[in-house]
Every structure is written in structure tokens, then in C-alpha cells.
Length: 255
Image (tube, rainbow, N blue to C red; front, side):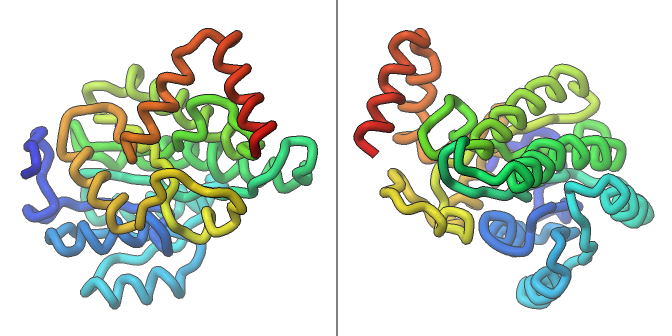
């Protein structure tokens, strides 16, 4: 049962822009919203995947765009504006490359920051003016952004930045814009396939999409899942550094 927060629900034909919709959680979210009657705009760099998804879900507007390219987002936003205001704009685009900070290529690290953090920044600036009053601007961080963990490298740092950015935007744009933050745990996607360790609470994309839709229909700023993982990490983050860092070093020794 969804809680009505005042913005049109998908079954009422809400107009929603999903960035990073070509696969993973983004594609699952598009399928879920389509079943509820939303009018979708699908974006990612892979136009062929977007077209296939649009056909699968019975139709959607496809606009290829790159979150790391402000000019690409500007062109996309100009096209979207012609169709009227958005009820929600959601970005799930991300890059990931597991490993230690000392091992990652510097150019690859810059690329990850460019997509994850700067991409969220560019998307927010492009999408916010397209929203109807009180519409939702949704950024995706990660539980990896709660605290520095082994093998998190620059990905975790970039997601910590996204969390901070969403908090800032919430303060700056409220109440004209309803800024929300998604912090997923481990979800089975092409990104997590790169991990060579056991992933606690691993979820399927469809289950993650369900949690996101339910959360966005509620009133909370942050949507985080699975709770059995996220609450533990939140507790770790709340501990004094003297304790928390000893625990994370222990993870390194055991990993």
C-alpha cells in the first residue's frame, strides 16, 4: 500500500525520467513503474539497450545521454522539457571497480568520480528545473558510502560524496523540490559480478526496485536496503573512529 505524498502516483500517469535505465536496478525500476502506468523517459549511454527495454515494457521515450557529459544532459533536458514537467527524475548511473586504492589506475579513478559524483551533480542541475513543484529528484548513493571499507576504493569515496550532495540539495531545494536518496546494499548486477567476496544480503534487481518504489511513495529522505546490512553499517559509522577503524582493519585482516 503506497502512501500518497501529494505527487501523482505511477498509476495516475506520472512522468518519470530514469537515468541509468539500460540494465540492473534502473531497468528493473523501469519495468516496475511501467506496470503501474507511468510515462517513462529512459536514459543511458546504450541507446540500443534502451530501445529494447522500451519495446519490452510497452513503450517509453528513449533519450540517450551520458551523466558525465553536461552538454549531453543539457540536450536531453531540452527534449524532455518539450513534453511538460516531470513528476520525478531518478539517476542510478554508476561505475564500479573493486580493489585497493593503491592499485587502481588513476584515470579509471577519475572516470568513476566523473560518473558517480559529478554525474549526480550534473544530473541534479539538469533535472531540477524540469520538475513540477514538489516533484522528486532522486540520487543514488550506496551503503558503501557510509564508511570507508576494504576494497571500496574510489567507488566508496564517490558514493560518500553523493550522499553529502543529496543532503545539501535537500536543504537547498526544499520545498520546491523533494530530494530523495537511495542507498542500496549488494544487488546482483553487472557491477557486483566483479566482486570476489561473499556479499551479505545480496538482492535481485526486481526486489531492489520494489523497495525503491515503496520508499519514494513514503515520506523518508533516505531509502536503504537490505536493513539487516544497512543498520549494521549505520551503527559502525556512528561509532567513534577509534573503535570503527579498528573494526574495519579487522575486516582487512580477515579478507
